[in-house]
Image 1: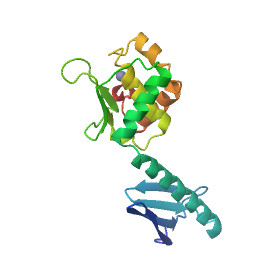
Image 2: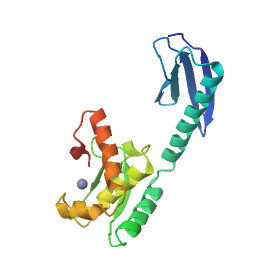
Image 3: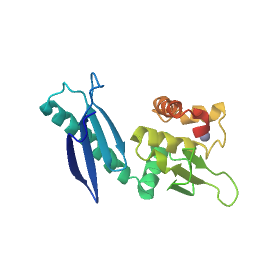
Length: 189
Ligand SMILES: [Zn+2]
């Protein structure tokens, strides 16, 4: 790998993204990239032209900026609005909860919902999923909301949750994530 072919700095709100672009002899076909904190590392095969690489780099930066912008909008207010919209659209507005909020201390589970006791109806969503697509976020919300009616994973629970139309697709996404990090998808949610 040739070091430091190119370095770009891209402003991103209060942050700056650093883009490191290198050529990699071992790559045959396509450009590979990773994002760690504020650094995008792009590796490109030798045969891609500078112009093509510029275009691909612009696409990657645009994707990362878009994803980071959508992650930043995910605050507790937005979560509450999503929960209300989900309840109204798919569950006829019949579900009630106390609070719904993002938490940073849930390491394995994606979401949780308490039933009974003094914390009845507190829904917590792991901030690990903030970068995930909207339809998966809405699935996790719908899943925890549905536990307000069925505090278990009974057949009735799954029937009820299936009113959220992207359930199967979102479960596939979560299975893919679980597969990639070697965990049991059923232990996540
Ligand atoms: Zn569940």
